[in-house]
Length: 341
Image (cartoon, rainbow, N blue to C red; front, side):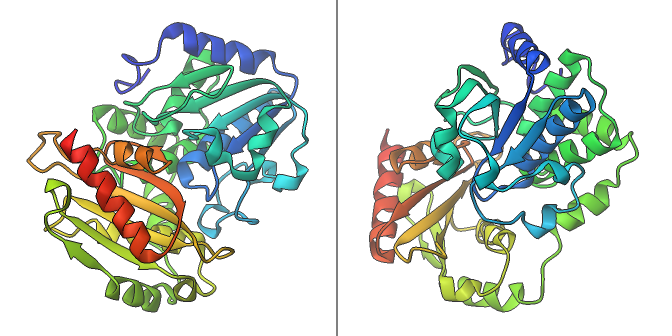
């Protein structure tokens, strides 16, 4: 197992997960809403292994209706089915990178119809909603946890599976800007299969249509800085429906990585308006150490938890409703409460 997971996941949990996967006669893998490369890469890696073992498998997510364009080149996408094609009653249901049942969106109701639910995740805020939960909050990505499970299962990681695992690893570590030594050990192993690491990274993280530039200009124009909030400072911006136009979901998701570079703020937030409901917002939070490697930055998972969401210490999110002024006020209040606790 990788250095980042071996100390945190009980061997019995991993063995139980392997047993459940090996015994399954059919498997449904559910990714979280607005899927990123970690949830989809994890799901597709598992799907490919199950398919080559002759096990019927499907992968799905509740929204959006189509697979994000940047992830359509991931091996195994032929196993992705529309949310409506996921039956109410399933055998083994596996959720990947989902911290709570709410992250499944409209597909959360499939949990009740499953014979067994295996939860694979690396979020500290995971609510352990499965019948079997394998959670490692120290893992750099859920794909790294999947790699550990495949190793314990004795299933080889070929080039196509490595592609999917690397996709989740490189995105969740911000191109290895964070994460421990285990991330690099796993990356070296995956690259040794012959995958194009640079090409995968460019497709997922460094390629945007031209329309992203004017959108970014409008959104960054809404940015505001509140220096004293939470003792670390808060910078935030809004992505409105009229800003999005015909852009892909990954374009709006990328905004937080620019806003978070603000030197005067220890916490960054981006409020993204829902395309379907004007008063509904998806909020991305990021924080960083207030000192060099001290680990004392604001715990945004705790902040998000107070607002109905969750995530990691330095990256979290939640969904909420209200006016822009209400949203900012609620976030400021939650930040102050967490900073004071």
